[in-house]
Length: 445
Image 1: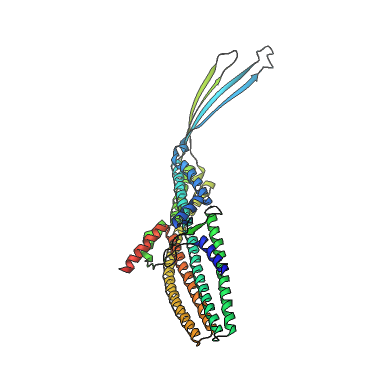
Image 2: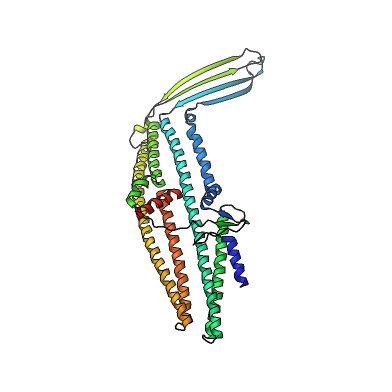
């Protein structure tokens, strides 16, 4: 009994939350880690999101400063020299130095496309960050719900331990009065120790999983948290076609596919303009040459030039092949878009069907629990009345525990399927809750 109290105390301190059938008072000094706080913490501590933020900032700087693409080239320099004449030995030898500065301004026909590509890269960086954030939150929610199911499983094992202890006490009394055999008494003692061992092992595993989760959130190893018991299952009935109509085009893969097509179109246009359209360049240069014995002299020169490429107009030339290759890549990207849309529709329809099938599994599991509980109660009464053997009672008790654990697994699977559907629709946890609320209202009506 002392070992049981210690196990119960550890489990209470580490995993104490609101009980499944009602709220319990929290122990003093124990902080509650809500799901929203865990999601916020996971975003703050994510290394991958931190790197995505850096990429996003870099892309934003480029998009906010498109003028840099037409900024002229500016250079400045100086020189120092010493000159002499071999044919006129009496000529003066003196050092000289010079200063020069130049400005070059080029207008490329593909400049407009280059600017649009930079803007598109920034939009893509935003998409990658937002998509990664949602995926991280959904993954964190899965882990959170998994820990809550582990806690419910501990409650099942604790109840089983209580049942075996009560049965042991009743069996001991029956043995003392000569109504049962010593073998049944020993089996009852073994059942208690086995139940205690199963509970202890599950508590250690749950403790390790919770510590790993807190470590991922970068909490101190000595931090002790209780999880908020928000694990509830409700039937969700969704129309796959309505979801496709509303969310299909906002999926990240669909947006990336469209962005890729737009980028390839811009690159093709850029390639054509660079290879076939004339380009204009303007430049100016100033230079000054001071001397020790002569007056200062300087000069200013300006030039304008136009370049007209001709090789790209020749069939099968290098530039002509590059233009054709860009067109091919564009056509392939359009095919990829159609394939992505087809796969996305199949994925969402499959998940909606899986959600419906998973709910039917929950209903069967709940029925199995009810039947197993009834069988256990009948076996217990039969054993007390002498009409059932102890092995039948133990089998019924184990069947009840297994049925309860299977129900927990089915409920967790249903919750994970709904989160997978949210990921497929590219919606957040809050959006998923709104969908569930609308579904529940529709079912009630």
